[in-house]
Length: 151
Length: 310
Image: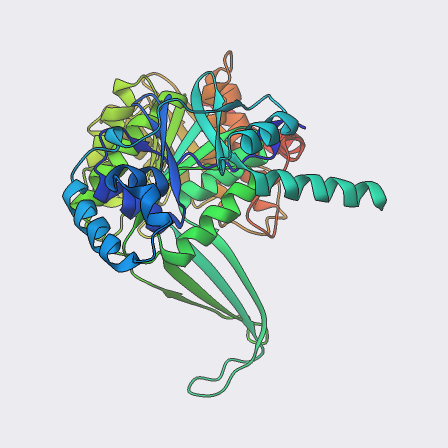
């Protein structure tokens, strides 16, 4: 099965110049946690997720996860988030990203998602963003196919 | 790819009732919800013909996400800008006994300057993937009448052909930026440029005026059944000889979809483009639901289209 037949056909994305505060607005209105970053020709240049932002704005991120006192760290987080709100996405996004072509298949997509421990995989055609695929989509399609075979 | 812009989408809620009593308890027999808005309808028709399309515009709240999901499930790509306020809904109360339809239409949400700026940015990016873009429908609050003109200029800069299909002041303003094809929406008022479209000669005059004001092709509908198509040196008359029309809602949008598809298919001349578009409109009008779902349905309608050059 080709990725173009199972992907979510949404190309909501952000420009690298998008301010962090605006990005958070997009994420919350779409109810998602990450977005592909594109240039003005819809060519993918990176990926930004809430985790990337938290990791970058909280220098001792790993320490916090293992810490007992959440409160003081939370104050630190809210302070730095405010400070960074006007910074561009470019400073926080991941630039080495994994993508997949729309003509590739679901096995490769599942492999990339699991191996790289990521939630969403941007789908490209000639380097331009045409959709996203998630593990949920792949599972949904695979289960449906099995049901069809049974019946 | 064929792009469509819907600035003021809506959710259409159709409620079927037995005998509507005002100021009383009424039971709904059947409820049916679909996404609406002229640009969205164009995308649905384009997809119905098996072609790729991307829909952009403004959506808001849960209703907005619902529309997006419905479109994606049909295979339409989405790239909407989500606004603070909610997408409007139109409620249609359809009375089974009396045959009356009552439409309750909400005013659209308020669009801010920031929203507009973001939409233009998305539009610029999406145009890098499109060959044709259609700009259709009314404007929500807060959107200036020159918006379609601005979008036409951006599309031209990126080498994308534009189709304008709206009414009133925003149509006239948009024409100034010279879209490739333009068709006034005459559903609310039967007038354009001060010409009342009653007879064939009025429609011809209006279509010529559309071309004179900047479009390469002007299309004007006459009583929702016939169409006049004008270019700089040709005038065409098109109608269908089919009489079992069930549903005219959305037929105009299917016509626009037909032209958009024809413009992306190399080697189609004007005559073939008109024929194909009329067949799309007819295929849509023959269905109870708004969209047709295959190119075969359109091809079957081709033989019911009569066109002649005047």
